[in-house]
Image (cartoon, rainbow, N blue to C red):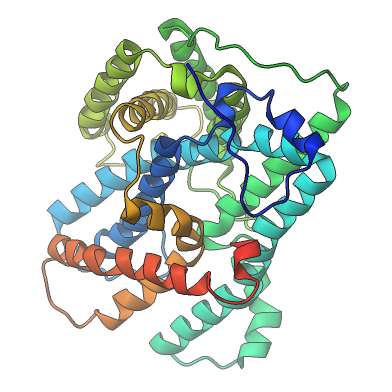
Length: 403
């Protein structure tokens, strides 16, 4: 397969950097289907949190609380399936670009870039924007005896964590994983840069074995940290971190071995069918296992339901990861102007979607519609709104360097 190296337009590329970049794997070329996959995942995150507002199936800072049985069931199904794979796939996609960035920039510039691109938005959101959002929201629903400064200094960090509150736990995790990656690269002996050859895509048995490994690790972690337990200072749900760590590690491996572009179509189609089947069966498995009566055994501990849940989630995760990569590579490896706009603003959209959809829902709380219909209406409003505001924010002075 013939390809070429795409150099960032915003950076001056030295002859040394160009020499290093020219021997990168085929994966070093920018592939539009990966950018389109990021757009899909960003929109899915927005919809995931929006359905929580109207179905109550999950945790969010505001819920409308008018859901019926159908809304609750569909909302629970949608959020449970998403939770099984979408943030893991997000981490894999993010990690896919890490080796090329490190190779091109070296350790110092890579770490500086990560701290600017991830650390600055994380600090600004966690310590300024989210406190204002939460305090304002509380003020709207009841009297606060404390001023903002008193509440901020006495309660905010105690009740909402040190950093990475809300959806920005993902940014905290990505920054942490990137720092670990850089440390490992610095500790490893330097080797001459050589072009990577395409290697065979993992067999179905290897994929299944990885899924089982993630499931066993998740089950073990959930013996102490059930799926609803959160490490408050960083807002981490440790029950899911075996999957997140595995997929972040898989990103650089996929990059070096060109797996994302060398996946056989037969493999992609097969695992896509497996994913569809497991997603359809997900509710039935839960119901037959007693989830409607008591879902506690599914969250962790020495329960067969906890092991079954870990296995089901792990296989949904890997099958969805492979199936979606196949779909996007096969059918969506191109961009029109709209997709280009969405791609440029996807990161900022992720950063700001919590306050945007929350305030939009608060403004529309008096609109009496069937919850699922209201979810659809608000999705049509808030998704364009989030990306539109992201575009405006990125036009602010110095914002382009960070966002």
